[in-house]
Length: 557
Image (cartoon, rainbow, N blue to C red):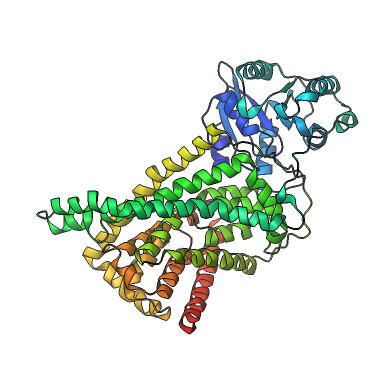
């Protein structure tokens, strides 16, 4: 869908200048600096762009195209999208890190079709190669016969921006046989090793950092929501109930009933929004600082045991923010690992809404500590699920060029735009959908349909030692994972009546039975209806079998 929108947005009256380079080269931040578009996708981590974006340069007849970072000898959709844009573009802007010109530029020249195309070379991370920059730029201009402009793309100053805007329309083809050896001899500035790369402790340190990256914001959100909920009840919900005492019952049910848009919607906002906001902030900081890349590189060996590699961990981690975004992010996966990656995302990546909803249910039941074993079950069973249903091996994958990311202070602008994007998505998309779920639940209850569905599911739920009233949460979680919040009906009394084992199994079953409909719809568009249907069936089987085993274990112990 995104690739289609990118291609359809081309303006035939404009010349196109295509940004091309490896992942983390700074293309997206350069795109933002040149076009003035306040896009929040750019970040200091590999694969932050999974689509080709277009924008007209100011006061120019040139359209700038931002492409995903390419991986040579790779068959990922993002690499193919970048190469497609390169073929169609009028001018090519090679974006190369000034610290790694000797490694990256020869690979790009040898593997990309650049003959007879106007080319401009932009050296990013110029601030990290300041001592040797002038001699390096002079040498490259002499060897290539084109304009070479060094910039700090993360903080593009007015002078560099003006120079680039003037240079793009004047770009000329490279020399026919440039001295590649002379470029290869240029020294490299290594980003440096950290504890993440330690041969003994690196993986454990990375795993600990990964857990902290999500545990800290979730815990803070839990404390905040626990403090906020009684205040919201006292100042908003209770006065509203009193004001509606004399209105018709069906209006009371819609507004403040068991599934009311205010009574239940308030639970959704109070418990889900802080998680969405703080997890989004944590992810943005780790991505922009470069920590996320270091973590995924260190965990590459462990990821290969489940049929993935370290880079595939990036979409999986993105899934803890939003599964739909993670599915798009999986375009960066190789064709032999993408199916396994999206299987793990759909099953084990608890999105922000799911995390907030499950925290709310566990808190209503008086057992917030259940969130820890619940999350552990998602991760463990999710990895087993991905390995069981996807037997592709990555042990013989071609070793790709990897560019270790510099660790640096996060860009405040990029972080704020990413957080703003997450917040807007929650307010504009998530909350309206959940309000719709509340209305649907109220209608189903008043019409008696919910009771009928509950009666149909009751025999199946009894297998897991769950009461028939749990059916509503299971049904609505299929629509959206925060549909779990309907289990908070009657002010959480239902959840409070369950024992710890029942509460854990119910939330686990409801959240894993299938991916939400929005995620499945995205998978259908990305990978086909047949794949989406098969994935749903496999996840259903894994969820039922694992939930049954968990329930047996709970009864025994």
